[in-house]
Image 1 (cartoon, rainbow, N blue to C red):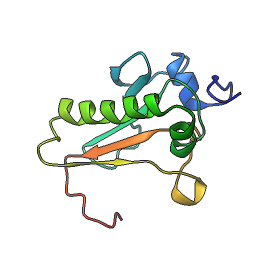
Image 2: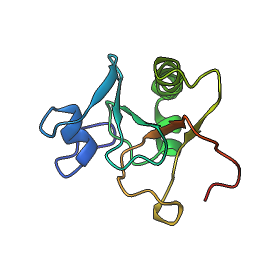
Image 3: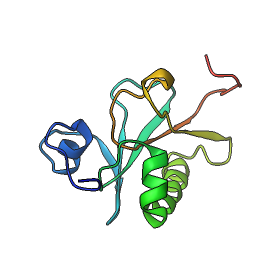
Length: 119
């Protein structure tokens, strides 16, 4: 069932504290932790505590938690002091776009030049 924890989901296991992560923020609805393969000095994943496969599915099912996720992304950037120099919030949706964990999540990237297009 959508929204329910999935036994085979890496991020659901992190939320349940079954797998360790370097948590930087936690709210009632979200969890933010450092990426284990950072692509920038600040690279934090912000995830909803409910399971939806991707950002579009989350947004359609629960707009309030989607807003919580975006607000927390901004708080992560402020906490890492990249809010003044600029940061990127990235949602990869689908394997063709690089999504490897099918639990909605935002990448917060900052602390280096982030020219577009990424590469």
